[in-house]
Length: 231
Ligand code: ZN
Ligand code: FE
Image (tube, rainbow, N blue to C red; front, side):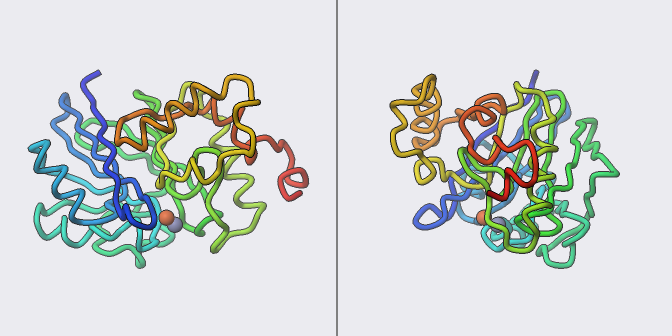
């Protein structure tokens, strides 16, 4: 498949956000998922010699939309934003919702509504590549805080994620893995490979965890009922 993904670390001093640049050669399409901060995204685009066509925003928080207006002004990108928080996303042009999957210049992208962290939060799933962009819903080893939604909403959003193929690669909105590590990681069977990926990501490399790994290691994906989840 002729599609590449480049993680861009943003807000590096405090929040460790990810923006992701996606280049789909076969559809001559360039996307930015969560333009978290203008400068690092713009400079990565220049290095890659790419001009973005669309920004895909997962939710309205400032640390996920910081580059929207700058990139819109510079490249004339169209900004796709969650339907239920459209008005809160700077520069929003196109409303996205689970009921209407996207087709951008021939590339299919599915939307999952995932209320919890915010009420309108959406996830972007690329069915062909099996890539899931989880924003602040699912992180490696943890989940986003409940700023707007209820535990029940978050639980059902996580069940939706768990229903995707196990090979799905998880691309979260922050690199928070290290702060979510268990106390004695060396005692967990099979955890060494997962840790290696974390170290690679911290060096800016592309090393996503799979959904299968998160199902094993992420404590928030263990519960199968809401009451277990709330405990
Ligand atoms: Zn957030
Ligand atoms: Fe965030």
